[in-house]
Image (cartoon, rainbow, N blue to C red; front, side, top):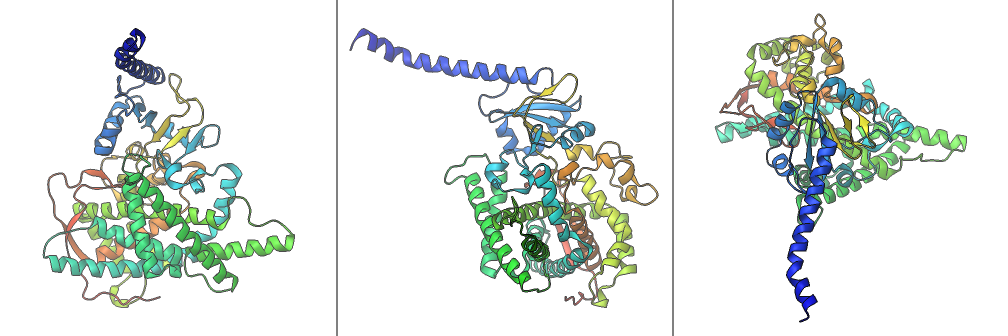
Length: 505
């Protein structure tokens, strides 16, 4: 062996180590340059940053970010990405009002495009986004919402009966999280795509959606056998299923049949547009409106409705149990308006009459905003304040949860009366109520979501007696992926009414 080869082999490990040390040093310097004087860790773990603590205990991670944000924001570093956490409401609005290609891109998840796919409602901007929201509007007319509330009540009732049977069988407390999740998945499937899924397809749908849910909370490793890869492939299959449902619905609406679910209302509107375009000699479909695109948009609806609604229903049970006076007022109001013995569905007019129950629903959403953070990507350097600029490529997390505890009177108190007609804190502190987002990407289905929560509260409080199985820390917040009580809302459950109503369409 030559002297050169000997020197090369003996120095190689030192060269590699020196190179790694240099890369780590540069990484730290770049992080500190971006950080400037912003609150946040001074030194971050090489390459991974603080992703391990984020995945292991997201509640603790975000609590630390919130506590550090003494000036309204704080920073951190996760898997090579500089991140900015925004606590202050006005700064959050600054981000929401600048969602456009040259400012901030709404991503829904730090690695959303890879997980959700390219054809996704949240990634649309400008006129394309405005046009699509206009086409979605017929899905949430009073007539459409009335169709949905009927379906929602029948499904809620069926699941409440099942929960009572399970509670009787177990003779002990039951955990509601997975039961509520299953109820909401059936509700979403039935309301959104109605008769277009057979039982086998529903089973596959549930499995794929569960893979998606698990992958949301795992490291973004897109390799075989990893949860993130399983989630991405599950989303692909879900979108294909939803695309097929959209095609079947369109065929049905072309025959002039009456809508039975959300996709029918949507396709009915599309059929009218198609006919008008044909008469005018215009091209169809417009950009971003193929059957495949519609399948992706339906998945957006499912994702938005499913996990956020599960969170809100669980917190409604937990908060009603811990505030018996509120529960009693709900029961008194509902009993004046609707009786289980009537064997009739709660009508749209009766639902509107339940004003106090609506205030309870809104306070549940304020007090425990289900999706606590709304991830964005900075498309360019953006001056957040006079002293701090968000660097291009940073992941930005406006905290709608923290905004809910700013401005409102005694914000740490669960107080539905803040939303009554006298106090009107929903108007006075409207800027702080960000659970449904703000700006151009504000949730288009918020009326549907509120109706679902009000119906559940009304029926659950009226038909069931319940008591929390309390334990230390049972009401602590955990992410799964929206926030839920730590104990998964364990309750003792029994029937309250003389008999269940006999509901039908």
